[in-house]
Length: 318
Ligand SMILES: C[S@@+](CC[C@H](N)C(=O)[O-])C[C@H]1O[C@@H](n2cnc3c(N)ncnc32)[C@H](O)[C@@H]1O
Figure 1: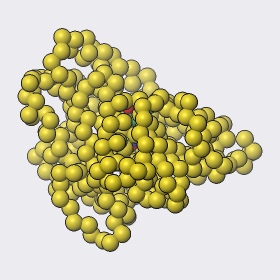
Figure 2: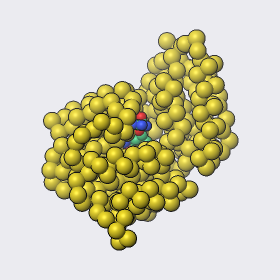
Figure 3: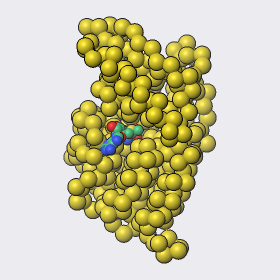
Figure 4: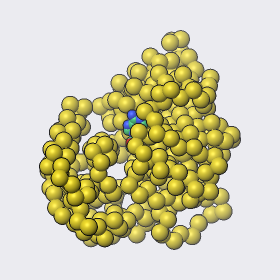
């Protein structure tokens, strides 16, 4: 079968929002080619992405590739994707060259192409993520291994926003916590929470592909007894009581989520918000504080901000 490959040349900061747009327009198998992956050092990064080959990467820019099956609406879909990407400039996101190219590709090529960029990666002092098709020898007895096959869903675990989320989960989780993962993608954050001791994890995503991927990955890690995954818009109509809410999603969506996150959290509950660009940091902080949260931490990795907030009155009593 022949597929259409959409390749967008853009910037690192545009990867998440453009990936979301591509998902929303029904594309499959998103692959990211970012030369920064070869050389980046993260302040709080505990290891390296192993075995990456420079020959696999573009000389400059970031390429996001996604695939559409043969369909008569290709032109319309591509136009809609271009329009949605251009609108990101209104949110202050730098799109770089913003060049979109379309080419035909055989099914056998795309189905496995992205896998060559995805290697075992140590993302905290405890956690290593390994793709299911790679072999890996743990380096210490207490290493927590997350096996992952994200398939078509977002979330290899290696993106800075995901790394920040997992590091915060590791720091704040307590045994038997009830955790809600909003925008679960591949389920990587839910699995991290489950393996780090959460009692019950509820994962939500708008995208049915993400929900299926979370279920598959929970089973792969043998913690499907702890994790439920369902299709949902943010936390709408969720009546659970949680110790922790984690959302690696865009800043503007976190702003909309803040009130519901407050409502579902128990007193002293923790809200981990990630996927925030620098320009939106103040907006998210202000919104969280106006909602009543006390900001515990603001962290930066590459160009991304994550915020950890607690459901306790702040000093001004708001
Ligand atoms: C950046 S990905 C994060 C995936 C994963 N949690 C991680 O950290 O790697 C954001 C996810 O949020 C989902 N999403 C976007 N808007 C949403 C909404 N309004 N309600 C629920 N999920 C949403 C997307 O489908 C996508 O899977």
